[in-house]
Length: 562
Image (cartoon, rainbow, N blue to C red; front, side, top):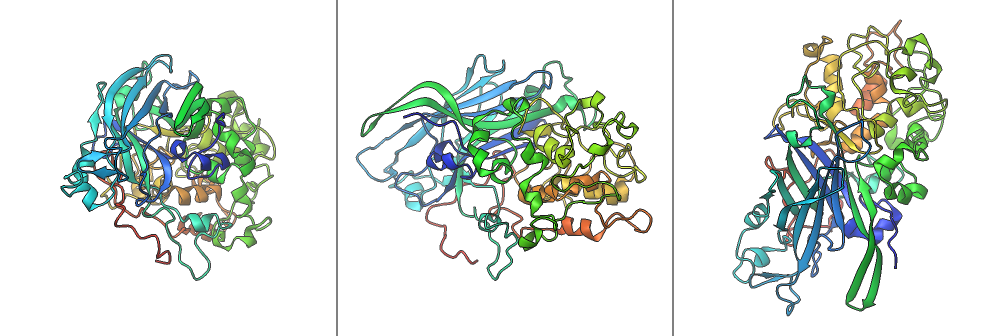
């Protein structure tokens, strides 16, 4: 039989439900909080693992190439660096049905890690035989003398290794760090839940398998880039990150217990930005999205329309279906921003300014970035949602905070972010020059760039138009930290919060009569919550930062009402 080249994330594409071992769940990329000369990249696979899921506990697949891709040069289409993990599994004691017994482990996995620094032309092995820690089955399997006779922390931490090329590496089970009310969100947008049942983290007490790399920034810089950033918005320090899984094109079942794989490897899963395929791409295109690479999105624009006019926006528009989704009532989109600009689906947004003196010299000028950001009429979100997912945001007018703009959203304002890398599609884009916000700081916020924008607009400490580090400028969507509440941030973004940040305020702001652009509509958007705002386990302060996996004997998936 042949594998279909489709799938990705938490079971969100139809075909991946049949292939969980190859299913990406999430990708994270952030400047390491305890080692700011490095960047940590995490790629998670195998969704919604029940910790008690024996006797054949989860682990990485043998016939899959798991890859982490890094783009650092906008002048060259394609990856500059690729890290490839491949796994081997063995049974140390095939005479027992137990996974662990008397110091021996079954379905035990080891891995080889290869790295390409020439765009995938060649690969060099940098970890020869890495160890995947045993699954956290229970105390008798782990701590007792009839098990592994160790502590799980020791087993898990002993699996962290250093590659011959200097990266820190981990591959193994972990708590699923993503938090979201899956039940509510996919019950036609019932988040926060409107009935008597409280919202709850649908991924609480589930595990995933994590690939983790802690990479020196010097390794990630593009060829010819200076070793030290000019400032925290230095474009030389921008990288794009995505992950994939690939299988041989043909699988032959020779007999009941013999499988032969052959043919070229075919991508069956990919992921960059969170929730793209889950909540932006419609079900009829999900498998197609997952079959192509971000670089193929450059020429294949069939998916762009779902960002120009996102379905979610229909449920935030009272002229469409907003009344049918009461949970989203605080989320509304600018229909008459500054008395002139409509960003609801099918409207023109800023397209009416195309070619005018008003946009001359800005990112919306065809002479600056071509037609990337104002491609046509009826594509209102080409100026905010599309670049967030496809190019990153440049430090060019109008993409600066409204601070200092004196009411003109197209004027120069406070420099805010630069993670512009316009040579691919869906990736996490991270400016490595932005220092990490300490996780124990009172200013740390899971709202990432949304909270950074609020501080930049309202805190007197950031009232100048100078480049300043504002807390959480290192947060999503400038990369993605484990703590970032990406579901809430993306829903706020769909509701126009990015437009407001650059001075395209909500409809209830009248520059003639309103005392402040911080109006009720803006406050409602900023105050929106899904009621699931943090992970069910605390993250670690050291690499690989994810929490250790849930133990099979300690979870309780029966009391869903709590």
